[in-house]
Length: 214
Length: 109
Image (cartoon, rainbow over all chains, first blue to last red; front, side, top):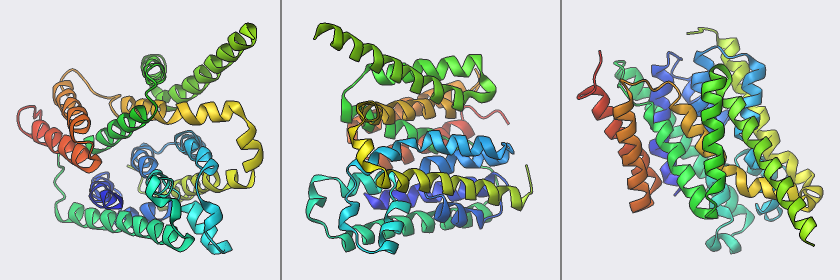
């Protein structure tokens, strides 16, 4: 599963170079930010010279889901201050999925750290190789940016399949389309904000109905 | 295209700091987090919704001309993933189809 990061990393490296950034940004971004979906978005934000405050807010909203991983990630098994720091730094969606799965219940802290390190190496190495390809073949490969769309589609399908909750993705789709047509310049922030507000509203309505019934 | 190393470095540093803060601070505040029903509710619902929003976001600039290759590649990615459930295969397959369509049948350059 961690190996999936390698080909995606290659696509990321190619896109970095084709966006006009120096090749070495590919390893730097993948090593430091190390949050796949945000990194792909970051290429677009950087090339559009997006204000830094908006970059920060986008990073916050896109990666806010990581807050919930603390509820079940086995950090208590990882020893040492440095080990814990590295383990949280590299707690990606993949690392979370792998270490909280059925098979990982007996894994030692050392094994968890090794897995996280290996995932990061795959990702950074893939991006470096991709950047190398991008420099070798400077001609734009039309349509390569679809890799990001495909990645999100896959993550969406997996997330929906895990919960079997259809109203939520429909609500998200409506929020995204409303934001796209009403606030095209601020679409991402508007859609994520709208979606969060809609979820909180729905939650409040449901608990009020339950309270009325009780 | 901003040829501005300081700006890119700042954007990267901010993204890294925000991401790490979101990943490590909740461990320090674990007890109140566990107790919050609202946060638990968000944790269940948010991932799928955020991914749907990001999918639409990446397609925001699709025009009438670029809609056919994007739509076909989107359908191909969905079908591949529902069929094989292999993330790498779905992403690379969908992207390969999009590149092939965009540079041949639906080439506008």
